[in-house]
Image 1 (cartoon, rainbow, N blue to C red):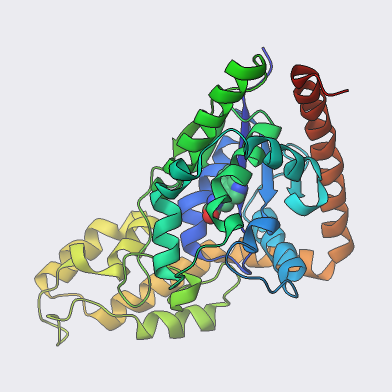
Image 2 (spheres, rainbow, N blue to C red):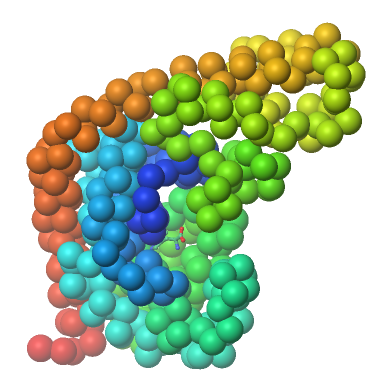
Length: 326
Ligand code: TRP
């Protein structure tokens, strides 16, 4: 039995943070043996909300470096840019005939994104975001797509498009399943529910220990724990949720200390910063190596794109045959 396939992707918006690791990368790394994975740098998708292209290449390389430093294996899993494999746009065109505008307008993820970014008039390509995403996934015949909760509506659209194509022209595509990421989101340093670049509340995978320390120092904690000996509420403290993830051995001791008041926030934070830096150390080392060997990074991308393209071309041949084009 050949392995089932995964297609996972991210838009290249620059250096990744620990929220990306917990919410996606860690999961991708864990899945790469069980599945044949393809990892997509969705650079065309950036255009749906930002027309400036000057930074897209550099951001793609930064993201690829973070992927590799976090343990994705380019030998097992091709990594490629959407813009370098023309079949994405070709399948996108065909898929755009298989879904109504009405259906796309009902998609909550695009609506939420438009609201967050204060977009009043949605461009055609942004409305079509999930159609291009369906092409991304189905071009590699992805059986499964590891995503967070917010992406589930997109996967549902992918399934509908696959079904519609198969009914109309004959079975070419699987109906991919979302593989939901288990770990909840990491909160941001400002106490918001989500760590995100646009909110400036992140710890980057590339942050050196001094930077981690100063970011953690400024993080908000339980506002009722004012003095060292005041009892705290770990369940509402973002530092505690970082301990939970990155310092599992000490977590029960920390919880008890915080609740009783024996442990003060300053000590708790310094401990958190050093656990985080211990976790980041191998990632930063690997990152440095890759930054100093950019030729190697470019070769990895070239090789991934070659292998990705071969799969994409094979699928498009099937699509054209099924549709009786040529
Ligand atoms: N929409 C995804 C995000 O915003 C990025 C993405 C583009 C993607 N194409 C994909 C994710 C294909 C999974 C599969 O995070």
